[in-house]
Length: 259
Length: 356
Image 1: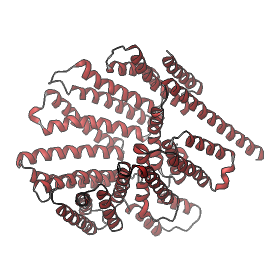
Image 2: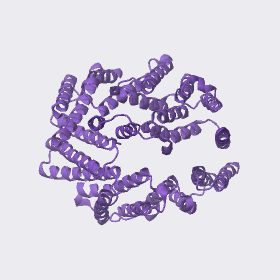
Image 3: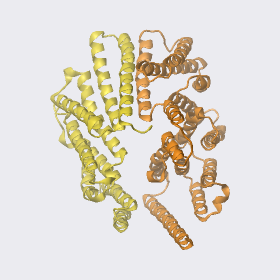
Image 4: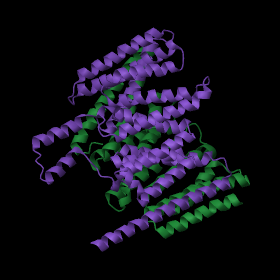
């Protein structure tokens, strides 16, 4: 009981202190984030003491639900990123432990995750462009969200390209959405709101897709490792050279600092 | 924190100088800015070069093995092919020149990929040939020593130097034969790295060629603490280092007598006393980064801080309840420090207002 009490004391202490400091200040926001972490700690310890036998996804689901309210009013990017991490873990665990999809539907999880993270990225950009929330302007938030969303979109595309004969409906659907998503991200960071770091992440992801296509074509053409390895090495150099030249050109065009 | 860090670049500095009536003509300004920009690619493009070289080198090594040109049974072959690739990498870099053309970019990438292949083959060749763990370290030492000044690419310099330092650390740590002298060696190696990093990062007249080496020392120090070592000696070195750094950053050792720095020094001693080398190291990185306007050091320090905090509390050999008590106590101490500093600032502002 003392263990639970100490954590509860921590949660309430953090929330009260956060209220006293106010959410306009970094100290209040950090205290709110600490309370979010402690909610998870509390549920883990509670599960251990009472042996509830609950699946791991339930812990993350409750963690995500319980912290969502104060995340909404937090005006603090790390709090949102933390909530997003918990929610993504919940989605993955729920898919594995409760949804139990068929082989055909296995990759639908990527569509759900693309939707969740893509929507977050879109909202983040929308509020940032509209200058509604100043705290969303920091470049690192955009970069983290972009990299994570691109990564989720990249996985089904690469699987689809490398082994199309085994591509199920869910792989094809998530792959198509991934390709459209890549195009949208590229268009936005190239023309609408130029950002060289996010664009670099997009170009890197596109280069990996091109590499996967090259690998597939070479294996179909030659079928032997020797030539495929040699040509893939050269293709890699060509693809990335073009990517670097292209990014240098854009860097000059949009006149970013020498990062 | 970024609002407290001044952002410097060549263009800004020249603009400021000309605004203060220094004579900066356009030709000189263009020359300085061009020199500043030509030295290295931006960080995000360097990341692409590294990824490209990594994939390409894996493909080339795969090709060499698949065609039986090299094999792990023929060490001489590994060494010779390694040297051929290293020489060709240097040649490609020379041929590439300095123009920002497609040819230049392609040759630079091919050169770096070739260097990665060459070094990998050479190191494995030497390591297998000598047939002992220190063989790889020796191979790294030889190849890094030879190429450091000839092959002017900061990524390669950093990665080679870091690999060398890390291999020394791993070898000392897993040296089962000399377990009695192991702690002595680890402490000695830690001191060497600490002194190397301190001199290179603090002394202003170090050539910029050695910046990658200074980062290699810094990252190797982080790796040492993160994965492997902790001892009373290391705590003492880091505590003394942090207090000296406070003095250096404040503008002189005599400044340590002022109340805020005295308090900070006492906290540093306390951290050393409770044996938290990781936390001390991250504070050193952040203070140093702040003093030198070096974002990379601040980011590394800030990212490692939660990891070291977690590891510190996780490794405490006490019950969960006592750990909770310690965390609450730490929070109270930090809040007390914050209140003190805030009060101090208000007092000083009040005094300066009265003086005005």
